[in-house]
Image 1: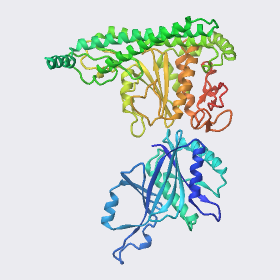
Image 2 (image 1 turned 30 degrees about the vertical axis):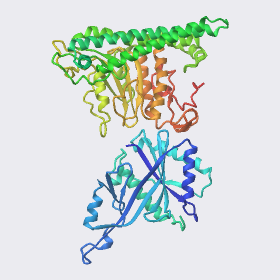
Image 3 (image 1 turned 180 degrees about the vertical axis):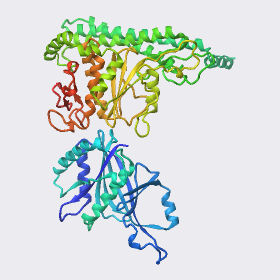
Image 4 (image 1 turned 90 degrees about the vertical axis):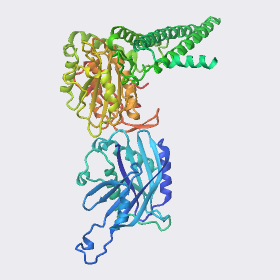
Length: 223
Length: 397
């Protein structure tokens, strides 16, 4: 599977995210000879445990609060669970969501959509998208996926990806936007993941990106 | 009455000929195809002559008439070739579709591989071998004649070589080669070349295949995970793939080495074809991603990724250069040069210092795809292979 980096938009101190940034990013992709390919969409759910028995042995606070599940557009038949604090990532069949609903053990407390446009730049594939809570139009953030199709080794692709992000930053800086796209360095080994890229790597990146976004990005007052 | 005739005609078409007749027909058609190809070559020569004559200011009609005549005859030849090709396709010669249909006669249809080489075997092997060999040879001669014509009549068209400054260097290098090329003389056989390469470049994986076993391997790629145990690869070099042929009589056919696969884990896979099989003369090379697979993975195929496609085009120029050096060093030089691409995704361009650059011609962001090859045939290691972007390369006109 080709290597992918997931970046998120970090607005400058005092600014907020808006759709305008998305449009600028789209235009920027076209300015470096990107070809628009269509839309993409992913869904992420934060789960919280439903405790029926108040006197259960598990204290509610000991259960992980960062348990999330994500469905990825390139793997529609699968669903990925991540518990970031425990460094766990699991691949399951997409039908597990039905089981979860039946079991009623964990309920989705926050549901987020990622959607936007996809671009082809030679051997690179770029996806820019906004983060919106389901049933809402207010943008919570902006993510960007960069994929380099010829390589599936994280290590081998590192320099190529770094330089591409530099080229991207340079192109974007011409548009004087108040913020920048940030890539989070993370140790995939801690999650039990190897050098060869897999959808689990994507899941973990999204989990980390969401954690950073929640910590640093103020939600927009108006979408 | 009419319907009986029609059904008879239909019957004649659908009634299968006896296998020996099928094979003989297929061989005959391949011979026809070879003759038409030779006619096309001659026609191309004549068209070039006509164009050359037309370029001289003479103001008469003769070259135009010549050109029109040759154009018409060329179109006829191409039409003939197309219809022969269609018949060959129907009889299963151009695909492997009939191979599995082994018949009780123990015969096999000749097979034209995706890269154009004809593999004919079984009891008509000798005849098939001659027809196949002559078809490939004629094509090579055609290509050589065309290239020579191009250089003679259109010298101003750049074919990737700077003729004037480079040729002086090459003449000097040639004499060096005659006097001091001891190390190169060692590498005359495939096992020598392979072991020398593996000593010089520790990370490379070299495997050799017969033409058919490569076809089989290519179609089964990519293997899930890492490809570290290709069952068809040979160790030692010359392998007998007699298990692939059913119904052979007494003699065992040794499938001569026709394909060399060079790979660097996580970087690329290169496929080199040797012609004739069993020799050390390379005639084509192509680069692919390690995640690609399918029957298009051969020395004349192209990768789906731009980066490998562009390198393959560049490699064709390098190969011509190495072949031009002569004295049988082409294969070793080519393989060594291919190894210089181990740094494809890590070594920045020697001119601009960056890894990625926007290629003006193709509007693509690419790493340095060029590796200098001019110094290579006499070099002892890969440090002479400077990396350049296509736009930064000193060869770029």
